[in-house]
Image (cartoon, rainbow, N blue to C red; front, side, top):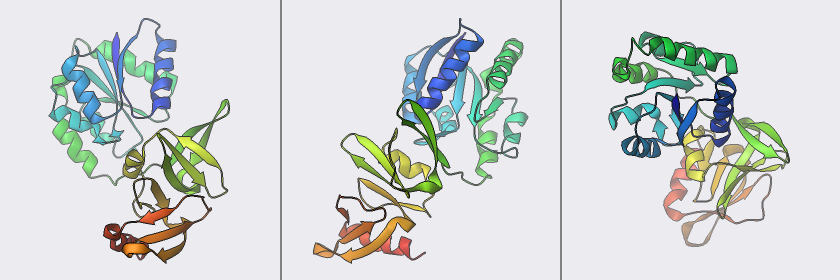
Length: 253
């Protein structure tokens, strides 16, 4: 059995791989893609696997967009953080789903279902348009936590505990309200799509800040703005003249 994993979180993809190996050592991971774009490219260039484990929310949008570019020839098992109401859509369309965090027994049951459906169903039974319509009726869900490394351990940090994110070189970091610093496995562009825009704002290419992290706003050269953040950081945080008005409006909402 060959399986393609479409999952934008590296740790999530690694966990799925381990779970699959523990369920059936003969399972072959055909690939792991992390976005709509990379998934479309992979499916256009490779023979489609038996199953696709597909996360709904990817860094560049909902994974249903993939079906608009490729005729999927695989059975699809969605992984999702949606609540029971959104999941009704999957039941109607005879598509299995796994609610995060994914448990081994649930994954095994889903694979067992695939074996039963193999002779009865094909990917053509998936009514993607109806599925998209159903899910669009649900409110947008924003990222609520991040799993990061702390030494040899993994630590789950609530988004509400984060003051701001910033990029430094090729790495991205976040600072918590109690001044802890962690590396996060996403670009600032990715994070901007994951976080509630009422709470977080991308002030420039390097910084994505929580509204309560703004300690002071100063006028700066050439109509720019300069921010002081809390917790303090030894980096200059500037907002361009073009973006200053938008930032002021965001702060005043």
